[in-house]
Figure 1 (tube, rainbow, N blue to C red):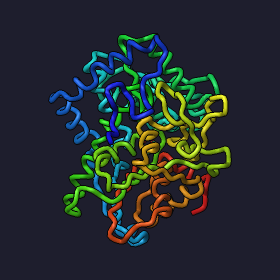
Figure 2 (figure 1 turned 180 degrees about the vertical axis):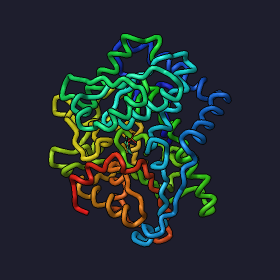
Figure 3 (figure 1 turned 60 degrees about the vertical axis):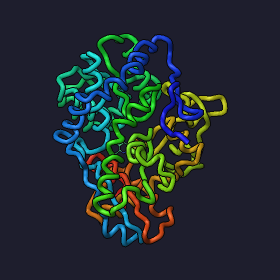
Figure 4 (figure 1 turned 90 degrees about the vertical axis):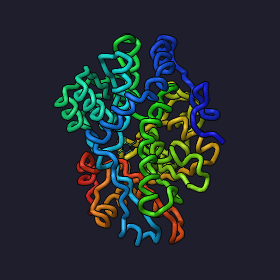
Length: 393
Ligand SMILES: *Cc1c(COP(=O)(O)O)cnc(C)c1O
C-alpha cells in the first residue's frame, strides 16, 4: 500500500484540489513547480542551512528516563519545542518562503488561528525581507494578543477577519480572497497538511525532516532505526505527518494520532475529527470533517487553539480509513493533567496541543522493551495563561 500522494493529488479517497475557478492559476503554478524546485540541489542546500543555523536543527531525540519508568517502556521525546519560535511550524514556513522566492513572489499571505503559524510566517518574511500579511479572526486576535504583537514586532500586517464567527475558518476565507485578487506577486503559506493539492504533500515533505532525524538518532541511541510506536497530536496533522513520514512503509511501526476531545467526544464540544467526521470538502480538499446532516461545518472546540479545527489533512483521513494509523482522542482535562505531569516528570512544560499526545500514553499498552517516540510539537510558553486559568497544579 502506498500512503503518499498519487499523480492526481489524491490519497486513496481523499485529497484533490476542489477550488474555485479563480484560484486555479495560483494552485496550478504551484503544482507544476513545487517538485522541480524543492528537489534542486541549491534549494536543498539553503533549506538545510537555514534549518541548521536559524531553526536550530537537528532537534534532540531525548531519552525521557523518568517518563519511561512511569510507563514501563523506552520513551524518547523528539524536541520540536526547541525549534526557533517554539514549535515545528517553522520547518514548513522556511521551506515555503524559499519556494516563494524561487517562484519570484514578493508578497506573502497566511491565515492563523492561535497565531503560531502567523508568527512562524512573519519570522521567515522578516528573515527574507518579504512583505507579510496575516489574516486572523477578530475574536482570535482578542484571545491571542501576545502573538498578534509578536507578528507586528516582526513587521507583519495583521488583518482581522470579521465575517462568520471571526475565527480560523473566516481568516482562511479572507486569505483565499486576497490570493484570488493578487495572483501574480503573492504566495499563500498554508500552515498544515491541509488545503488543495499540492499543499498537503508539500507541507508533509518540509516537515518530514522530523522523522528523517528520528531514524538517524534512533540508530545512534538504540542501534535500530525504527521504533515500535510514534505518537503525535493532530490538528491539521503537520507535526504528526512529519514524525510519521519516513515510517509509513514500515508496517511494524505503530502510528498513533491524537485528537482533541474537548469536553468529551459526545459533548457537542470537541475536535475529534476521525471519531465524528464524515467525508466532505474543506478548504479545497476532500477529507473527513465534522458536519451537520446537511453538510454545514460544525464549529470545533478544544482548549488548545492549535487542535481546534473541524477537519484533518487528507493523508490522515487515508491513514485512518486504511487503518495504517490509529487515532485516539483526549479531553481538555486529560491533556491539562498530562501537561503538568510532563512538567514535573521531565522538567519540560509542553504546549497544550502536545499535552494531548502525552495523555495518550495512559491509553496505550506497552511491553517493557517497546521503543516509543513522542513528538513534542511545541513548548508551553504561549499557553501560560491557559495553564493559570485552569489552575489545578
Ligand atoms: C499548530 C500546532 C499544532 C497542530 O498543528 P498540526 O498541523 O496538527 O501539527 C500542534 N502543536 C503545536 C505546538 C502547534 O503550534
